[in-house]
Image (tube, rainbow, N blue to C red):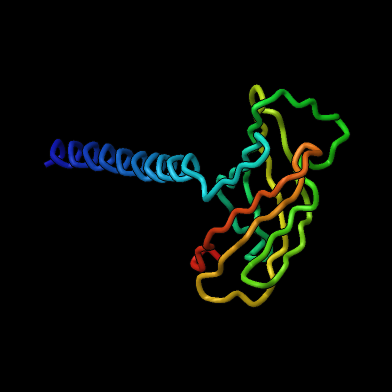
Length: 155
């Protein structure tokens, strides 16, 4: 009996470790896959803006939008630049939400990744549509508008 319980404990421990590994790895693969597809993109004047994904933070009070900007030409960005985009507008349905911060970094030749954080309004309609809009990237005029649906279950 003693040997049987020793094998049972070993097998149970092994099974538990396998289950934990699968639970940690599987969501990471799913998240990476959805972020690679992005929520939408817009291109104008050789500059492509993609909204890669979003995260609801601060108990549903803020949203962080992850974006990628890719350009066909080599653009030099001043180290003191606070934002790559000119006055981005973020709308939930017909309500303009306020941008609170924008951070970015160069990740490759002609490619930048960044995050914009904005405040969410207190009232959220069911299946809210979000619209991200800017009329300037890298001091170049244009029109980049991306529309997608937020998942209400996340906030």
